[in-house]
Length: 105
Image 1: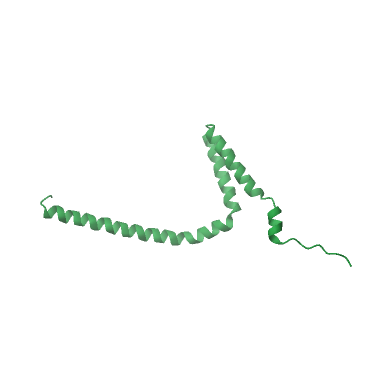
Image 2: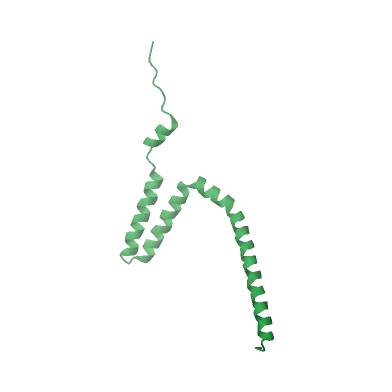
């Protein structure tokens, strides 16, 4: 009888896996901070954009989920802004009525 080695489960293999994309993104963001602090603004901004892009590529599942729910949040924000505008218009109308009542305008 030969002994068979058990295959490691997925969490175990993932724990030992090196996340090169995360390392590259973090390193690029650190370099961009150094460049910005040293006064090399254009190079620092380019490095920051590159690091952010790498980070987004690494988190594509989270970014996809965020992208799917964003329209709902934008619709809700638009609704709230509409309500705020109605309230401001109502207050302006009441202010005009009070000004006329007290002989202001």
